Image (cartoon, rainbow over all chains, first blue to last red; front, side, top):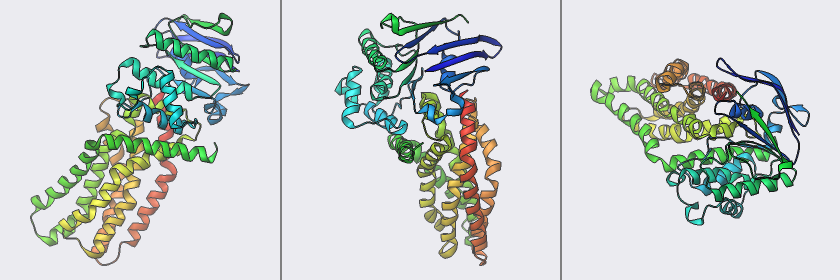
Length: 206
Length: 227
């Protein structure tokens, strides 16, 4: 269970949100919506400790994530609005290295499988990521979700530059993650096509 | 924080950087060529007097090595910062200072080791031979990892700052002074016949010290840079 208690965020002079309290329980997804600049990404970065909150605490299973540190990182997969993909490496190399660095299990078949699940054909698996389109690069980044066995997923605009087919694949992956008792926090502008009882919406007004 | 996981993460980080270096060989070649050219310009400028060349050899080669290291510092974190690999690195379930050691080790393999391997050749150009030449190689072998370690702190501190190339030079060069003094000093004292052991031990001490403190400082700087 992930809890944010009385969070406040100020960027520069602007107060983005204050006294924000929200709980995400296993098997559900928190969809963070709001206008540009309303603090959605800041909230997500706070939830993975990349940004420290001005006030308030974030608890994972009742413990402060700032104290848990590495134990907390072992529970989460974060995909920011930057892809975290190396342009000079191929999609296969990117995924293999990312998995070995984060400690996820990965074999050549699993990597191949993950890339196919996200809709990348075999032909592009061995090309430098540099030559792929924006949408394909995003797919390479999101393919990590098929290798991740972590209970908590934090995704920043996962559907940006994806076509309808890929959006469908990712939504399907999210659904099975939730069914297995996973949690997800997703910053998005789009409606997430998941059963309404599993989705909690948080609107940031800025 | 289990041990095998830590080794996997370290190996993964080093492997990725080496792979990237293989894909961008020109970047690596550039700092090596820089070293060779700078070191070759001095004999041309100073003149072919062997006694003079031998006296300036250590200083020139060490300054050249230092500048070559400085040139490649921008590569340590900047690309990772821009493409989001760095923020992923901060969220790995292993202590960040350990991962930083992996990054720095890869940087040393790419930019420091070639300098060490080339140094006997460059030393010969300056009329060094025998023991002083050996001491030069040894001093670089001990000194260049220290340069990478200290440089990583600077590289992390200037992340996301405009004109960071010059800023990192201003930050890091003063910190390089002790390494330069001990490194060049080792060769000079070996030339004078008193042996370079004292200076080499001091270089070793610098390396141990930087191995201990630099990863923590770099890790802290990276966290600040990504806030």
